[in-house]
Image (tube, rainbow, N blue to C red):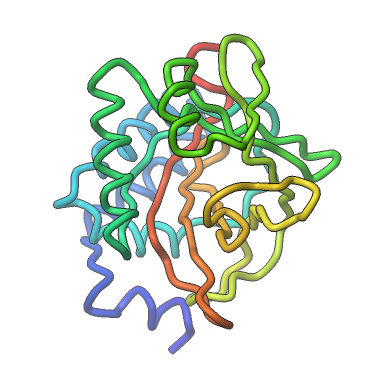
Length: 223
């Protein structure tokens, strides 16, 4: 049995035949109707946001493929954060912010030529961000706050099923990222071209653990 098959069969990683068929159907649909397939895939990621659906995310991630992209601005949604009390609290704050009109994370922007990028926050996040990170300085672009810069590249994941992912790293000293970001590594796989599932991982000593998932689409929905 392959490593990926073992991961898919792990009792904590629940997947249904409907999920597998749905993914196959989306990839088939993309070949003839890419715009329709992207909308359907994005709707699916939003469907998986509720806490009761999170058990399906590890397997969907394992069935993702190494992405050639993305490039440019991507719209983002937080799927869940967990693994510690502060991450669980942050997850609840993000969801509350969405209900209150989009306070919080807006997505990521990638430069594929240089292997660089940054995160984008909504303008209304300015005051909460200053209160929690008073010494960190965001830039402003097109009405958004940008920061939490990163480097990205394709490489194998240190976590099962050790597939090739787009690794997003925040630990470069020049970026001077705050909080636990230097110990954070995001990993991205492609569901279909333009729609991506990411997982956030956190380094503890010499090991990594998954602490959440997020979705991205490119181009962002308002472009």
